[in-house]
Length: 127
Image 1 (cartoon, one colour):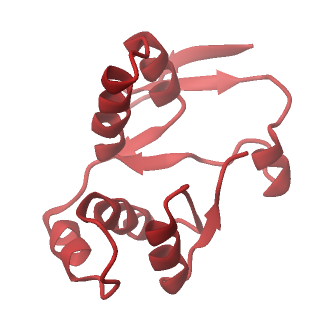
Image 2 (tube, one colour):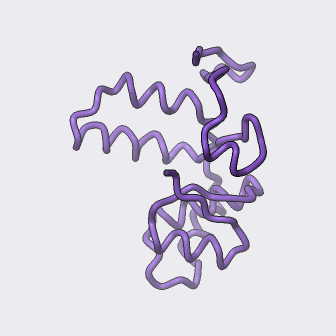
């Protein structure tokens, strides 16, 4: 059963003692770190508003993610990726993933997936 705990940095973290998901089993880690930039919070909350999803559910999802701030140089980097179809916010997600030295990125977006692969990241699409 998931429970929420506060980390040393003051951010809420979720501890989940439930069986590993197919994603976790596929990647061989009982609890892989899920990290994103702060941009994820804005995007998820906008999705919640558009689709009338209770914001408490959005908060519960975010509790399972370590959010990191984007640096100024990552904004510049995101704007300079050579993939012409890559959208601005997806470029920021890619810059954030590369900035924390992620080995994989979770996305359904084809353009972001292609750019991530071009930068050496494994692409995972949730089931």
